Length: 129
Image (cartoon, rainbow, N blue to C red; front, side):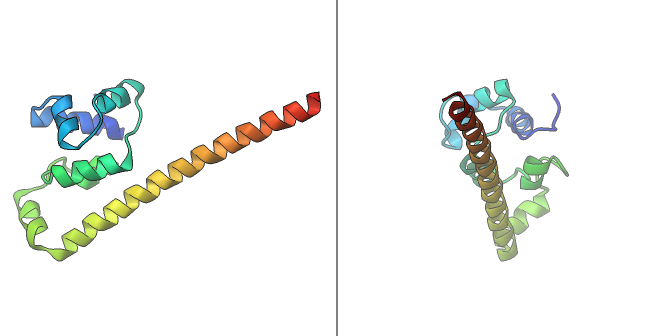
């Protein structure tokens, strides 16, 4: 399995944790089947689930999760500092904002595509009238 997509990285992490996909979904408060559906369709998951993953699996590197760069798991030193360093909390908040901005951009692109599709359909209906 390649790590080049977010959903494949999530699956790799689940496998490394030795838990079932359903157990993972429960821990991140995801609807049953959402991960399998995304895997099957090579799709994405909602930003709120990404945030939940990062919050519930503190050993997971959010950099690796989002970009595939670096190591999947944080080092012991990174885990220790994440618990006591306010700047780490700021970094987590920045990552959350970034995730939400990416989600918003994706939704805006979908809206534009639907508007373009609708305007093309409207043009065709006007010409045929």
